[in-house]
Image (cartoon, rainbow, N blue to C red; front, side, top):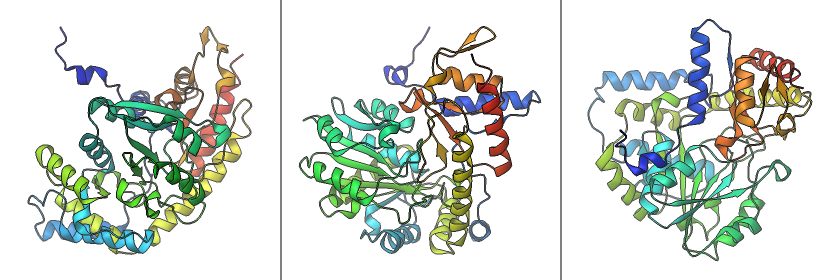
Length: 397
């Protein structure tokens, strides 16, 4: 007997978390698995941030915080947006949440209702379409393949907009592809959106600092976009603080107030100690951020070089984040010991069970011809993983 709500029945489980769990099960059996499935920095949180958290515990930051977060943290975010992005916001336009994931979901739940359409460029992060469905909206998938560096064009955006379009979700640098929209490319999208003021942009910029092409560009920088853009960001990726669960939105005050009202009913303010740690992240030394960025860039160069040596892989060069998203459909239809690869999910499972490397099939990201690899791991792991992948794929005939 299944008494679950229709809402839950519509939801797909997270394939990234499922692959991670499967690889952990194999590890528990004593199998040496290299996990390239999880999007998480392998660095530790910088010491000065940990010290701030310890101090917060000693100073008894152990009570409920205001729903949108402590004023000191929101002011630190205001300063960050001004100093790094040249964007003007007030503390009233900032809402802190339990990770950028909640921030995205808050905005979708506040803006989207039944019958509303949300444009989701593919490849997309697995949770975007699911969150839209959760809000009773309709995800409209716009596909951008490897030949256009996984980025949608202004013409594609224009063609996807209807009277029912409520929002566009734009992730740059991108998970799962590592593609980064340039200022010129964003200007092209902004010119289309300026003609459709009913469309809001949810700009997921969580990978802002893991960028290999220079300064980060935000679509909020264009005057015609500022009032229609909600920036989502947080400390998880830049400061290696995934478990601290602090994300934020910056946007028009009416949307921030709506998300505040929503959050007030289902989680309240985020963890008090984590907020003090995040404040230290934004106000303290940014040197560790650059050190980690350099390490990710070195790993990017390494994994791209090795992936290009694998026959049948089509590889682009990611400009940010820490993912490689090779096209691998040349292996579809091939077999090994009675097992045939039909799609990327089959290929990912084959690489896990035979090659002992965990990746995620691209179907979960709206690109069934690709697989996602996270290179947020050591150089040694990358070298060994790519060797295993090359050897394992060679078995397919």
